[in-house]
Length: 506
Ligand code: ADP
Ligand code: MG
Ligand code: ZN
Image 1: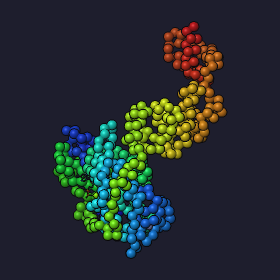
Image 2: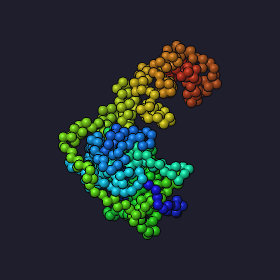
Image 3: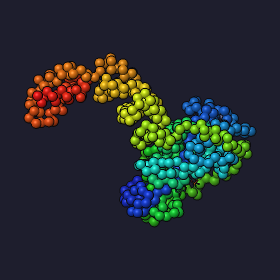
Image 4: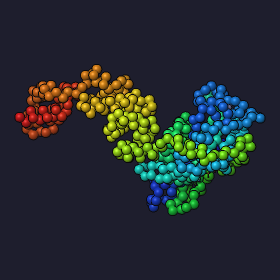
């Protein structure tokens, strides 16, 4: 939706501000205001068909090819609720400790917009499917409970495509009727970092449950942020603004940081914060007024007479509960308990289900979990990050990583060579054993072979040898380096060290 007016809150007014307001922190007495944030998150559900008709939800089809009289809002048609949507919502509700309403209802939210063919959106209002949950959110090592106010189901609207050259807009109804859940938090979040961490936590859960792909850039997960300030120690909430249009974690955080500074400056000058909806303009790094309270919508909600109330029985909820997968928190605890990993490793490795599964497969084949974890967190994740690949697209299967670690363990390759082999595995997708054999990378532990090289190096470096013998200990490292170089990194470092030391001292 487009801003009516463009009242920009200019960045230059910020230059003069004390940075105080901005200091994150609960309970810091030097900080005059406490930040209060509540998020409303929309998540597109991964059902195959839409919420009230049989049309496909597949993304990227030709415009208006996934439509029918129901999702086009033709007169006389009747919506029929997709059972999967209710099931997915219950999954999320259970995973976030919400209560499931035995009786809930759809409502019509009335407004006019060209991407909304019926003139109303079917949503839930007074009687949502789920209420009163919480999630545990970790920010900078500190864990806090953020309460969830409610989770309800609704349908998505279509999409407008604005012509670049002519004053024309096109409308694509493929997205109309795609199922969404809206997850509304209580105003429990206390900093922009915590808002981003909360979002990440919810995305992780949605993905673990396999009910939403969580892609913010593509709009399958969207976030509106409500933010206000209040004097430290004050109970009553301050006047809030609502921020929209942020399509990444980073933008959510930046927009909130900007808005907190803006509100702090107003309050410092004794001016009121006006309750309004603001759009985040990422390219300029400012919020722009979209609509004020006076223009706020009156949606004239009322129960949708076309849809019967939803009654969810205890047995159904229990059946869904039994089938919930292991959730991120539980898996993290298990990784610490069963694999003896540090909390940090467990946190990183469970950040996605696929990564956690990768680790478990590798650790099964090479049962030294900390070594597996180190390799995943350093070598593997570095390569993936460089190529902007997800673990799902990793060219090194977990069994191959385990095989490489075994080669290292048996002394077939040195630690240094293992890294070279890993790079080769990553770029070619080949097995480590094959690479080692083919390139002749097997570690040389044969003392006589190494001794020959050591003798060569001693003969070629009389200056360094004399220097070392005269007490310049540092030169020892240089000589070791020369031997390793001549052996192309294959000499067993321990054997090299022992031989050199004994020869130099004799
Ligand atoms: P609205 O009616 O404007 O949509 P709601 O009461 O439905 O407001 O709350 C919407 C979101 O805003 C919720 O996530 C809630 O936690 C949050 N919220 C409500 N009041 C405040 C406030 N004063 N400051 C910050 N967030 C708030
Ligand atoms: Mg709201
Ligand atoms: Zn349809």
